[in-house]
Length: 116
Image (cartoon, rainbow, N blue to C red; front, side, top):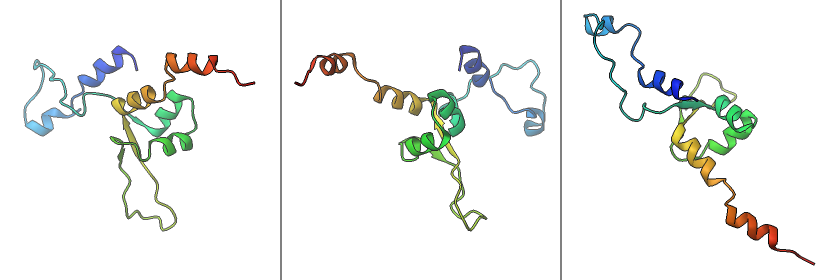
């Protein structure tokens, strides 16, 4: 996501604020959102597209990752299979990306070790 998308997300307000408060919000300043909604939250399909993986691979990777939210109902209507609805915060995606990074020093050590 670019800076423009993050600014648009930070300035999010309900569409019908007048209905909720009883008065118009025209002229009032938009308040930035408080954590945890101050960062993008991705669906599994969005994460898969960002990482270049299939949705099933992304679901397997992030299913037990700390900080990921599963919005699926434990006791859904379907008697066959429970569908997961995982949401991945940007911080979790960044943590995963940093954790899977191959460090430069490790890469050099692996490249220099020869077996005969």
